Length: 540
Image (tube, rainbow, N blue to C red; front, top):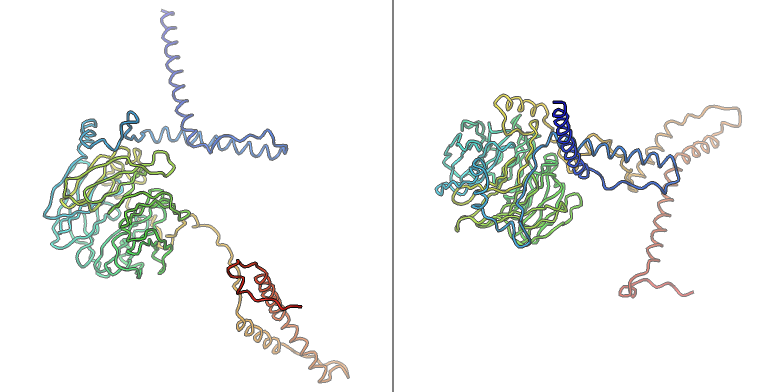
């Protein structure tokens, strides 16, 4: 019996040892992901103090990477998958939706569907932040809220007029629809809650979740910001760049970007009447734009058949791709969907170098015209609004596999939703916090350099100081011979001259600097083509 027990214990030890080896290998791989390159070599350093400080810093880097790897292992158990080709001959973009449907499970295959409603089309779509509900708006007045988990339409209404766009507010309990004349806000039951008449005929809507602001652009090129928690207009801005229906919100800093017919993209905040950024992106009209979830990458499409990827930290082009797109959208994992006509193309960046290449293709039925593309959060699903209804296709690797229940919970209950809404209202950010670089919030503002005063301002300041000195002069009566009027006048003039001296010295310094600059500019050698226009020096 003792021998049998010993063999069982040995087997257990072997199994636990193998498991520990596997865990350590996984941790090593994840630690490499979080490390900032290889360890530095300090053998050549002679300064012992510096060597100790740097080695301690390297130790801290390693400890933080190990901690991050452990947290990822336990808090992020699921890993996102992608389509992988078997060899160099096979290409992922040749795999069709029918092939994917045959391989996936039943619950995933239900996400692949087509809803044909030609009498109300074309459709635009919007998802809640947790991906649980979808809002569909038909151009001819049809509004629908669909439970995507159970594939059940929760509410359908017919408004009887043109609907250009639809967007959810803080959750599925309210949504806004841009109709023929005004923007309307509806409740979950389809009952009209508000009519926003100040915004006019709106073409595009966006909701800023952290600020509770509904941003809209109307047909006259006016950008409006409506605070839906207070019912007040926060910003009313005339862009001055004409009509546009290309509008997106940067998820990183809540800045609204507009694409214009002149090829420019402007970025706005509600507290400024001038654009924060105005950049020329294309030589033709901008047809679509989208932001990466990290907020540092922007994709734009122009009518000159070019798709450009921009680094917003430097405002430089990273990549230019051939092709035209009427609609663009980034997924949570960074896949880029482009739609034009009846064709959908998905681009991927597996290397992490922001070099996008073709990943998947999908062709709709001939004659369908795509109007809207939108990835569903936390699912490998792409929603397509088109001229005959809406469709849904599977894009492996597009959704985030791990969700944070404090941010967006796909399985939230009614009680959790209510608590979340209260927390959102308590944590609501004021409009002044919208800026290009939100990391500046909470930092100390640097002191500005004093602006140089003009000649008139300097003279006025000098006169004011002289008058003040004159009023303050109080001559004391002294002994005989020292209180003569001439001596008093001389003393008075000396005091006034002393007050004028700093201003006169500053004027002299400025004059000398301007003379020096003039001499330096004259000494600069001109190019040969311009030398004949230079002033010739007098012969000595």
